[in-house]
Image (spheres, rainbow, N blue to C red):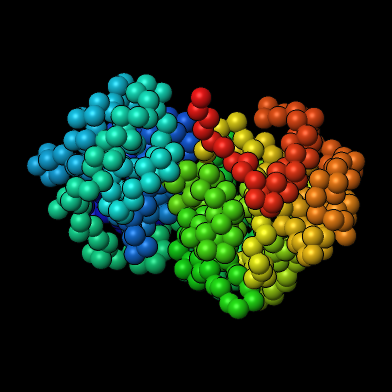
Length: 466
């Protein structure tokens, strides 16, 4: 395998590396760029944050779950490249010094790269931009003060002209020497993928690698044949028509957020808490569906919106309701060689509310994720789609609860009348995140919460002051 990219402004060609070599390991072991730290090695702590630049802009990503082939033709800036060529400090570095934003220093390089990327993109929502960088020493107050102090400073000259125009990636990683590992397949169109995957149905498909990356870093699995999907531009499209919103499977959560902010703001708010900026910049909608996780956050929202899943095998396409895709824990309605091409749902009046219940507010796995889409006319429930993650072995609709409230006057009595129906729909498990009793009680309470919000009440309180 032979790939090329810019590394802190220098053109680099990498050959004879395994397709599942992570950028973090390569930076530290091969290039001795040890400012990029290994903390969790699963995309949670942000100590390994790097900036990736291409024709889509500048993004902060976790180097620990980025595989080298995903970087072909791109520009990589590590913490060493944030500093100027003659040692000049970036404004965020100066501000971190001035505001005492570093103590032990282990997390600081990741913070610096996240802050510099946000600065380059003109982002001033510092709490969100830094939610994926964990600090256990200094605390966030001086770090946020540093980010605020630097936000209006000019972009340094050495970062402003980042460009990948002098790299010719050639489309796909090329084969290396005779003894080198096999080059992975990197399709450029959905048609390319369909043809190849039909002939290689046992291959592993990798889009953002936020899930598959852990198969390598934590489980040390051999992935066999691999196809990297991040180069398929036509699979990233999000199309809004008069009747439908269609989301390409390769669209990232960062791509999806502004669209949902327009049409279903509560879905967008849940996406904002989904992983971190680094994770959302890589994780794809299709990956979050195809992995079949019972605690994935996007399927409950999409099911509540009445989503249809678009699957493809070669030249054959088929559509199924998203809720029917999930058969059992670890089992989905997807044939060998078939892949998720897109998901779509009808344009509709916004009645969607999404409730993500987790121990941490930001960047945490849901104990329960409940999404409600209830239609009310003349104070009577005329339709309901209620879906949950974390309550069963798959994302699942609450059919009995829906039937219990449809046709009822919209109020506390309708909610109370559905009490027993919850246990008919769900028999949740107890695990490290929550007990079965807690999950069932929370699910019941969320229907009350939806009612109160629908009646104009305030239920979302993040800060309490005496």
